[in-house]
Image 1 (tube, rainbow, N blue to C red):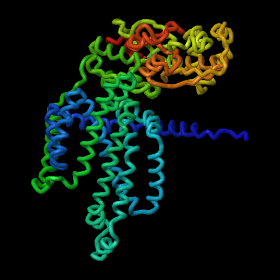
Image 2: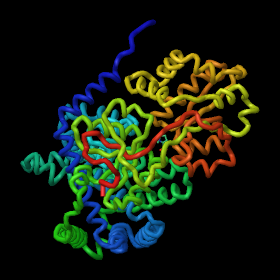
Image 3: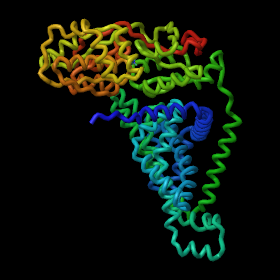
Image 4: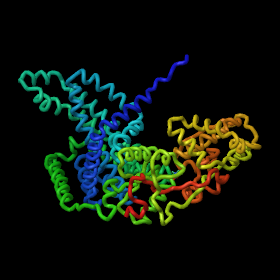
Length: 575
Ligand code: PBE
């Protein structure tokens, strides 16, 4: 049957576009509010030296969940501090607490409403099913468009992912209140709100707290996902470890997440019914805690002085002192971190995320003519779609012009000589690559764009395949990272290999795994090694175990990039 594809994706795209524009004011209000609340939380939690918070948490956990868990809390938090993950843990803890707080503030009333009105319940429950089953990654995409990159879209996505149990359990808890009690309270002539606050809620509290506990755990499980759009903390440490294949760091950061999970889980489970409540009354403990928090806020608000300084003060505060980066393992990220050090840009931080998130952020800023600083590279279609400029780099921290090399696994030459020859002869110009990239950006699929380029450039392709033995359906696996440049090159070479009798399997991976998989032979080749400087570290690590087939393209460039409408010209101007 020849039926048109229903343009569901396109409809969603335009809906999201419309929402982005129509509610821009609301979104920036929410962004500022959430960001502000989070900063307050982080400030409170990091007000004193780590040991102060460690002791307070230890006492609190001991009080609610007995002394063995108190000792565990003390030892494990000291371990986190010792391993160097304290700051990340504070970030993560704040993110989880804030998402948890939002689920309580919004989830409990919604759950109550569901319990009281059948129609509301009939609408809300299927929506919750949908929210829980939709892969959490999907929420990140519109979140970036609405809230930019950084911690806010991460919190929003965690909140959407985590709110369901609170709503469900609140509804359940209230519905489970025995009918005779309701009847009794009716008989005494209590009003609806008396019934709710004096009978239903108190009886439902254990169930509601179980829901809140689940929500907090779900929010914690989102931290790694949230780091893909730039949320800092332990999730970002894990993501960075994956991206650079750093097993040790991955384990340490993962362990810290487990520790925080255990502590939060026990705390929220036992908060209602503390283990040592017969020794000190909960009222005293929680009032003391509240006083401590309020006192900290007061002290902080008096001692905090404004930070914006220097000539870049304005620009800094407008951009939140953020340089918008890409995947944490990318070579350009190491260069940008070095640039921040070399040029003494102590106030600035580099936001980790992904190339796609960076471009989304650029688009958004560009449309509103707002200042933005990104890590950029050429060739890239963004230079033809926007007026952009590289910031001068007098210290040459980003290196100069580079090549992109093709790298194959050892033994490929013997196993598939034809494919090896094609890969070896593959070479093109930046303008070629740009042609493919621009088409993809204009809506063509990567495969279509690659096919079109091949049809348009038969002579060039003939040079690559010249003298290469045809394949007989052997499979060749290529690895690449989802940078626009490599999406273009990898798809073109893959099509050429297919047209010459090979079955090509493409795998999109992170930078470290890309090099590692060719080195250990689990992938056959890649066309994405930026050398001599961008990927030097990876190259040096694996050079014994790979075959370098030399450049397939000359003349790339990395740097910090800003829109033309900004009046700074050099990285030095950021100081
Ligand atoms: N890039 C594009 C990559 C190489 C290709 C510049 C973002 C990097 O920095 O690792």
